[in-house]
Length: 186
Image (cartoon, rainbow, N blue to C red):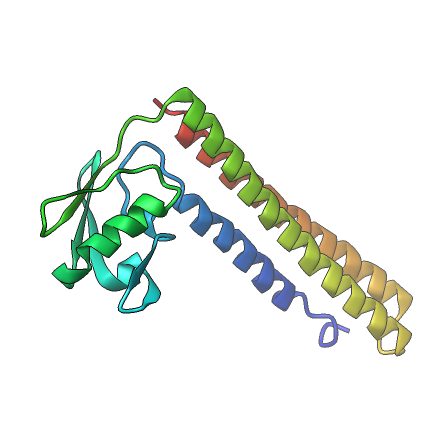
């Protein structure tokens, strides 16, 4: 039975969903300068859209300042436009060689908006985990119908799968709680 019913793939996929939520959370700004804030920014250069990291180096020399140093100075205007068009709420300031992005204090209203955004991302992660559970349950049902496992084995595997699902949903919830606390920190 243990050879047929292997939940390590389901666990691997659920871990991927949790990692995805954590990566998404890292792109939400919290009032502190963090280069990962610009991970979702796309810039149109050389006739195509590219991630900002492909055309510039991003650093945080101070707690409230991001510095974007383009690899090609000719792309500085496109980088400014890309940052300005993104939803991160930072205003680029250029001196012709580098772009400075001062990170202002978050207002209470903006904090609440970011918390709503984080909750939406967490819900997407929970839905992903539940979809993985659904797919695995369907596979177990097919195995039972084909006679490869017994009904008891199917039931035991379903219970293990539900426990695994609960663990990963709790981890997503804990990650959300940490992010909310970080956003509310003044």
